[in-house]
Length: 468
Image: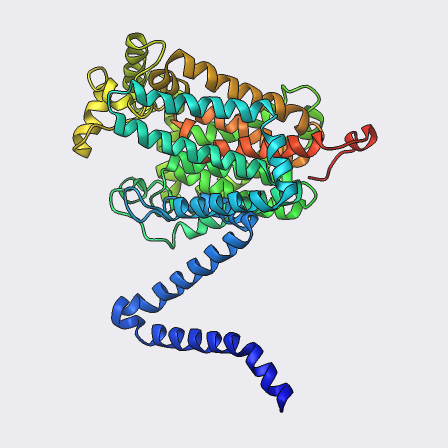
């Protein structure tokens, strides 16, 4: 009896806590409909899942990295307002967990130290510091501060993903690849917001996602899967490929189509990379042509929307081809001419280009506030951050490719990441991708692989080709 009493006393707190939790859960389920209506139970389950995920992330930061990768294709869906979003909350938990682990994990701290010895990491830091400094001369310091906070978050993503060991980096990319594929059928299940391109023009974009950006994210996920992660699992790659092709085609994104077609060809120009790609490029194009043929024959409504946009690719002089981008680019050039060295400050493009661009004026009038973007990565950086900022940005991109090319020559995952970098640069020709999370996810992945290979000791091990 004494043993039983001692045992009961030892676990009294545990049993009492479990009982209390059960009572609270039962009450919450019983009253969920009173507070949330018919969706009360689903709201409660969502809250419980969020609490469980938050606890798991705080205990293990790598879980946060996995969830962040899985959430990227659904970023717009996770927004709960003009500022707040689930992806920001997830990133904050991830950064806190990473910082706490950094204080107690010696191996992670050593890897963190080595990260800052890499030129690419220093280039990203220098660029973000210049963005922060632009608050001092920005006309609208509030927007500059908001842009600075965004770039600090992107720097955090580079550090976190760059600190992953290779086996966890593979898992992170696997989560992204399958989440991106899942987002295509989910796009027809998720509610379509009013005013989105999917609701107005019929262009595919899950949960109100921008069709252009979404199509390019799908292209990056496809190349990572087809040429990287699933190279040794061809059947899975072939089964997933039509899903990606459908998503890209249904968006009607001309930039997405160009990136899908041109990226492998551009990668063939990289020395010693052609042998890794050439035998897989032709089946990719054949599979893509077959998928598009099926879409055209089976889904005429999707084909009609997409073909109207793709046909304008041959009409270079048409205004419809550029969708007002000439005016945006002209405005950016005018801003650069008036502020060539320092720029007008991060986030201040629309303020400065309002007098120069009809597109910015029209966009601002429709939104009842000054708004608009340059729709070109280099022009956006140069107009807001000046020649200094452009040099820092180009140095960052150059170092990313310089680091990724030798890795891609011996790593399947590195090959997929290099192709993703090429897609990002093609996207930057017509989109404002200097603030897109996927770009910095790629930078962090390059750093993680660089740390992995630089840590190898023997030349014989360095010459071995990895399966990933």
